[in-house]
Every structure is written in C-alpha cells, then in structure tokens.
Length: 349
Image (cartoon, one colour):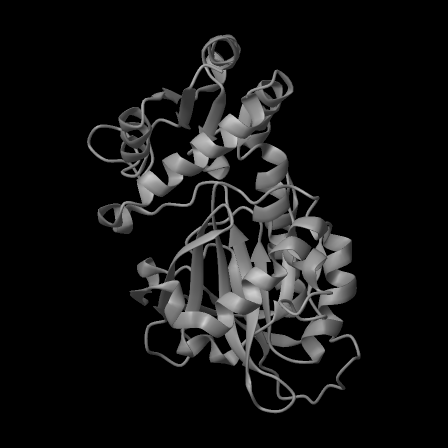
C-alpha cells in the first residue's frame, strides 16, 4: 500500500477559487497529509488522459473524483473511460463511474419505486417515442415534474401542468395541442406551450451520452422546503433545509433561484434519518450492490400519506461532485479523510 491518493479536478468552471481549485478539494488533500498520507491534485484534460493513467497507476492507491462530468467539453464518456481503466488496474475509485451512474443518474429513482421512498408512478424516458407514448397519460392524472439527467442548479427540470379550458379524462392520453404551463427550476420562469411542441423541445435532454428524462408527480409541499441529507459513505453529516423563494410558481430549491438555506444536525430530523438509514441496504441492492459513494446527497420532499400524516419522498440523489464548502469549519474534510483511509486500508492491506 502506497498510502497515496489523487484528487481529480477539471480546469475552469464557476466552482473554482482564484487558485483554480474547488474550495473543498485542498482541505481534503491537507487533511490526508496531516494523517501521514500523501495526496495531490491532478487536473484532467482529454489530451493528457494516457499520461494521467500511467502516472496514477504507478503512484496512487485510490482516486477521488471532484469533476462534474457534465462540465467536460468533450462529454463524460472519455473521462469515465479513464476512471474505468484506473479501476481495472486496481486503483480504488471514490467513486468509480458505475457508482456515479448508479447513485447519481436521475433514473435511480425508478429503481427505488418498490421502497417507501419513491412514488410508484415515477418513470424514465430514454427516447422521444417513450416520452410521447407515456407522458401525455401521466400528465392527464395531475401535475408532473420532468428532470433531465445532465443538468445542475435546476437546468432542465420542469414543472408541468395542464392549462387548457377543455376537460380531459384522467388516464387518457392528452392531445398534442393541449395547452400546458411549464416552470423551469433554474430560475422559476414560466413558459406556455402546446404539449406536442414541448415534448419535441425535451428531446434535447434525451439524445447523447446518458440522456434521459425522469417523470414524477409534483409535490406541492416542496413550498415548505426540500430536505437534503449530506452523507460521507453511510454516515449522515448534516441536513440542509432549502426553502424555495416566495411566489406562486416558485418550486426551485437552488440558491441561484432565491431559495433560503438552513443547516441542521441530523438529530433534528430523526424520523427522516430513521427512514433513510433503514433503507440504505435496500438502496445499495437495487442500485447495483455497490457500497455507498464517498460523498453524496439525498434530497427529500414532504407529502401526506393516506392518513394525512407527514411522508418523505425522495426526489434526487447526487454523488458525482458534491460540494461541502459551507461546512469546512466543522471539519468534514477530516471525516472524509478518515473514510478514505479506512476504505483504502481495508482493500489494500
């Protein structure tokens, strides 16, 4: 065992400081160094891929990916190919692409509909034909949310509701000229379309590497706030309560859209934590049997059960490049470093 870990970053992007690094990367590097391990940052670029592979295999036990795959100009496939080659050579991926896709892709929700976390009527569309075949029926039953797989900060996440004077029967496919109202989460702006035109527009989210749309019921209680659990492996670290901006159409819980954030200790959300941690083993089984990612989040919304009691609904998970800059003063970087050391030591000893 080399006791050596490399952190991958990508040049540029709005998430970098003046030194070119994500603000949470060097704290993790330094935390590992303080514990007697070697750690350094390598910036990924497509034309350096082969050199990076050779360098990492020779010098490191594990890699930690701090790259948002969607931000790579050439697309994520070349980057993932490099990570897979490293994993095949025995370098521990934290996480590797299979875990990123298993936990982080939006269609993970459709694999969890048999749990108590996700509504049964949650669907994934991998072609325009599937979207046009199934979405008009789902929308006839009530307000929906469509989520693209690649977006961030609410881009390509649409709240869709029928806005037509005609009466339509629930469960029957809506006509293509049905008028709909669409609100995008990125900034809560509203657009009006005919259903057929909007579905054609959404084809941009389906084409290309890992393209897809996930369709799930809209949760009106999102106005009360989205609840994000930040995890390090199987350990809950903090809970963020994200309340959307005021406004009739506002539903986005991103800072960019004006949402207000509050940071809580997990103990303040006991019911939610008991539910989520009780489902962790089942989540792993249904998402490919992989161990939990190094740093990941699960986002929940409130709903009501059939008896009118509070119920938590899982809306999304993220694990490709989750940030925790706001909590560096709480020593999360040390928790991450300890988890890295534990994982590498168990697999390399």
